[in-house]
Image (cartoon, rainbow, N blue to C red):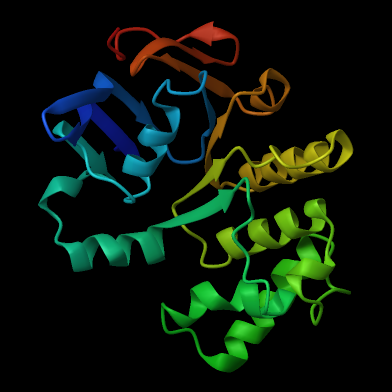
Length: 238
């Protein structure tokens, strides 16, 4: 039996401000297999973004265990965590997070610089990635010259460029009109069909239904875990 890509075992997260302790995640247990497309849904303050930040090595848990590919993340050093962020995960954000004063192709090239890809190979891969998202004609444009939908497609090309184990999409359609948002969701669905693992945080029901599995959270707890229209049993904790 294959090991899940992501495993949370009784994970909690608390934010401490002086004597005030605010629980964000309350003892959740779930797993995500390689090749899944899962949406995490919940209202503001439900803990969905905190879950993503922990999964993406941007934050650390307070207690419990997080296994990535069977490896205990809590045992990793800061340098090892940084390496995991560079090699194992990609991110797509609601605000795109592109460098405004860099060209489209330079934005996509950047992640490859950190993992030692040669200059010639970086250029080749970036051009191919941008052509795949329909932006082969925009290579030398600056990101602030693009529409919102185009900028998010650049972000998708950048997120997938190093072939990460998983891509996290945080409200990827939040700043887009309906038509552009639909195109982005279709592209994510297409990437998943090619075998990529995608974890999307969203509050939009329509967006979530592009995924095959929906995890609903509220007040730091998992309310339901539905895959292909059927509940998954025996894993998550309420």
